[in-house]
Structures are given as structure tokens and as C-alpha cells.
Length: 416
Ligand code: COA
Image (cartoon, rainbow, N blue to C red; front, side, top):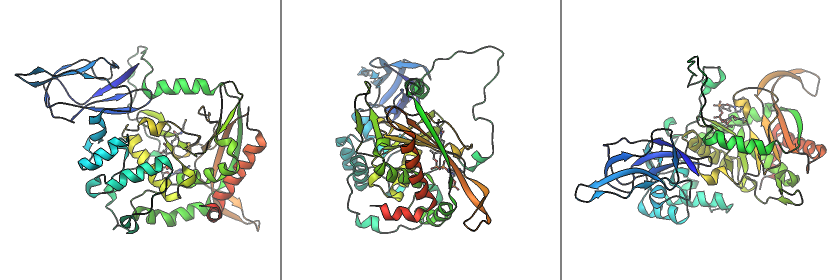
């Protein structure tokens, strides 16, 4: 096994315990390896972007002239991670703030601090952040803490979780890393997330896909989100359309559990999954990743939005861990944030269904009285595993999902 290595240090640098040494990306996750020692970097065993082999030395650190060279840092493949990594994660170069007690709590529960959104001053991670994170993982509902009931003052915009891309995405712009044409062919190894994509998509195309598409009128939802967005922002969360799409899908899955199932390799058994771990295809600098929001069936729209913000922050920082990237049971891909109407999404095995959402467009449509009005139209494209899901089931699920989104107030009837 191997990992792709991106480093923060060079030979001769002084490092302290817990300083970031490098970022290692495997086909499963991306982790920051930190120093176990105070000392000076004497030797780097790999260059930037080289493939580092698990179990082989990564770096030599001289801890003290009298003591000689420290034991070599080894490459860690993927989480679970070492004590140091658990207790000193960094996001975008900023150290996570947490007391030793909170770090210990995180470590004891095998939680990476980089995955927890801190709600304290300067994004400090509090004990309740860890407990909330744990609750989301397990589906347990924590009683609201007194603090959670107090609506905090409007945070400064820079303290809100950053959206991965700004509105400039609406205007096509050249790619950030343009390809330099040297006149010669260039061959490079398939690594990291691309490697994972090769593996998953090759397996996916063995599944007979059934496609189903429809048009959704989001006029009411667009209006509702406009009203709720500032309220969510006051509570520190960016509210996009995705939380509604995700919650409506979960309500639909309760009625059509075959869409939240998996088929074993011999096609003899179908397992109906208890949790709705809804994957969200994410376009990141590193490539396509699909983290999932766990236990959507017990989450409110606001909680889904908050979790999505966390996943987006980590995704754009290349910091998503194995737990967030595995265990999905159903997927939604909002390619419409980039453009397009209909698409042909590919199922992510072992899941059995996926939905892709097109761009929301203002288009003329007729109302009940036959009058033309400005409608907010979005197209949806579903793919389902036709070995266990028939077209009628997919269509009925889609109709239900559509009805929740076209009449968002109707979701209230079924929200727990
Ligand atoms: N059509 C038009 N606008 C849309 C939209 C759609 N379908 N979906 C979202 N938007 C808007 C959002 O409302 C937001 O606008 P705002 O700033 O006024 O609130 C803006 O686009 C940016 O949304 P974003 O921050 O990206 O959040 P999101 O929750 O809507 O989407 C992701 C999150 C992760 C799905 C999205 O960022 C992404 O990566 N999409 C690409 C997925 C992909 O690559 N799929 C292909 C897989 S093969």
C-alpha cells in the first residue's frame, strides 16, 4: 500500500512537537502527519508528490546534538491515526484550538479534531462540539445545551464556514491550473482520489442502470430558502438548497427503503440499511469526493445544513477522513451548481440509487389558471440498480421527493 505525499517542511527546518510535517493522501483519505519530536529536519526520504510507502521512513529528525537522530517518522496509511494526529490537527494551516481534556475526549472516541467544527471563541473546539459530533455519528439525539438555546449575535461573515467556491463559478473561468502544452505527450500515474474513481466507477458499470428524469418546480422552495437563509446565518450556518434535497430524499427513502439498500455480490440478498447516510458528490481541488451526511433520518434541515458546511470546509481543505467518506447508502450529486440540466449519474456501489440535480433556471411555465408565470425549474436525473429496483418504484419515489420540494410546507407533516 502507498500514499501520496505533500510536505510542509524542508531539510534544515526546526520543528516542534505537533508541527505539521506533511499531508499524505491515499485513495481513501487525506491526513496531516505531525512531528512527534522537537528537533531539526535532517533528511527527507521523499520529494513533493512522490509516492511514499507505508511502513517506510518518511523523515529523519535530529532531536538533540547529544542524542543524535530521532527514530524515523513512518508513513501512516489512513486513519485510525496516531495520538499526535488526533490531538493536533490543522485545517488550512491553522492549528485547532482545544483544551487537553477535549483532546483526550476526542482521542478516546477516535475522533479527528480536524473533522469537528469548533463553536467556541476563535473556533475553539468545546466538549459539546465533540459530543454533538459523536451524536451525529451514532444517530443519538443530545438534549439541547443551555448554550445552544441562546441565539448568538450575528457572527462576522469571515467566521462563517466558507463556501468552497464563490459565485464566480456562474461565469465560466479558465481552470486554476492550466495545462501547459509542451508539444510532448506526458504520462503520469493515476493516484489519490482519481485512483479511487477508477476503481469505483469500473465496479459501478457492472450494474445495469435504469434512468429516470423529471422537472421540479422549486418556486416555493426558492422563496422559503430566501426567508430561512438569514436565520441560519445568524446561527452560523450557510443554508443552500442541498439540505432540503437531502431531507426530502430521506423522507422518500422511508417510504421506498429498497432505494437505501445494497445487493450482495452473489445477488442473493438485499440488505435494507437502517441509516440514511446520504452522500453528496463534491467538486474539490483534489477531485471528486463523496462524503456522506450520516443518519439524515434523525436530522433536521438545519442540522443537515450544519453538517454539510462541516463536510464542505473539510472537503475543500482536503481534510475529510475515512469515516466521512465511507458508509454512504444513497447519493445526491448537485452538478447544477456548475451547470447543466439532465445527466446520467453513475451509481456508487454498494449503493443502489443516485440522483443528479441540474441547474435551477427561471423559465416560463403555466399555473393552475393557465397563466404564464416565472418558475424556478430544476431537472433531476435518477439512476437505479435495475436488478432490484423497477422503474415504477423509482418513479414513485421521484414523485414523492418532487412533491416535498414543490410544496416544502408538506415536509412538516412528516418531519420527526
Ligand atoms: N442550480 C443553481 N444554483 C444552485 C444550485 C443549482 N442546482 N444548487 C445550489 N445553487 C446555489 C446555492 O444556492 C448557492 O447560492 P447562494 O450563495 O446564493 O446561497 C451557490 O449555488 C453555491 O452553492 P454551494 O456553496 O456550492 O452549496 P450547495 O450546498 O448548493 O452545493 C456541493 C454543495 C458540494 C454539492 C457543490 O459545491 C458541488 O461540489 N457541486 C458539484 C458536484 C459534482 O461535481 N457532481 C458531479 C459528480 S460526477
